[in-house]
Image (tube, rainbow, N blue to C red; front, side, top):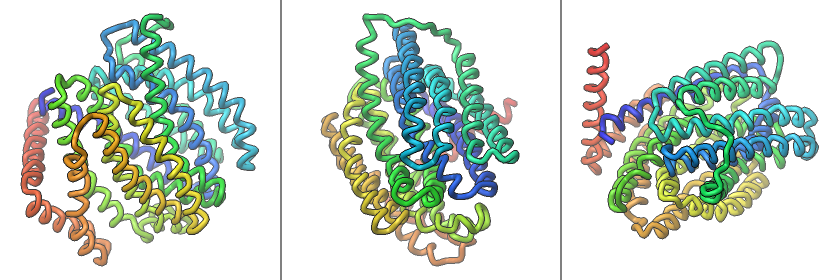
Length: 478
């Protein structure tokens, strides 16, 4: 794929996910003004279980299509049929479990909320198949358009429901609107008319890959959501409301960057002809992502302080402030690990991802429980930074590189180098007035990069020039 096409695709994916995340944050901002932290806590519990059930729809059959391609209709129809069957079974399971979950958390209304979300599971199982087809075929512009329309619809329905007093039901109503619109648009834009059919000769291959992918997603889910579960159970729904907002803020950048990596990385990695090219591609992607993400996460930490939280969300949300920096650490490493996850999936090895995540999960849970008992939501956030940051990253790259027969050192260095370069700039700017922090940090960070990693500085310079020329060319054509 040509570099300019890659850049253009990356821009479309970035725009798509930025729009989706922006509207989600705008929705949270509006609802934070209208709802209480305890009401945020209820929807936080619902999202924990929603996220669990979507493991079986989001990263299973769709991921198989990214790996296998879209040329063979037998594979597509089989994947589509299995996805819908799984969606229906999961929906019925969630309906059956909803009263038990509500009783466990002592929230009677939670049962109705989860039953409402069960219908969304069927919609999402349909959506993710067509989403995967469009991703594999690199229809990124169409995906961006669809996401923009669906996200706008979600914002309108969520806000409207909140304004008429629907409380946490506003989230569920907005989400359902998103899935209905998104599923309809994706089916139309993909250009594929799939039908219900399971072909025996390919069934085993599809199911085998999906089991490995689900195992990976289950472990990733545990590591990504059990901190919320722990806070909700041990510290209560109000504490979960605080923690969940901090979590959403810290993961805002990850939800933009990670889909870009997955949507570009997996199909491109899968089409590279030999091992050497795949290894070089993984190194370059990891290096570029690390140098891009490091200053962005640092800026989020420097900008979002107690004063900003008070102005934007209100004084009730001040307890979010000390939690956010620690969650930003785990969010950074989640972003850095994503290229390796995509490479292993592209090489037909999702089981490696599953093993790593399932090994780390019980360690993370223990850390969350101890953290909650010793330091409340701040203790949980610190445990997330240590275990889901440094420990998870080191172990994942060690296992992944060992399975691929590659050197771990060449990949960990670019993961950590930009962090080390950012520390001096961060130390200098941290104590300055809020209005100067971001500017001073950027200045000193790029000075450090220029002195220690001049080749990377040159890459940024060339990238800016190419983007400027490309955008200028587009404006002239129009």
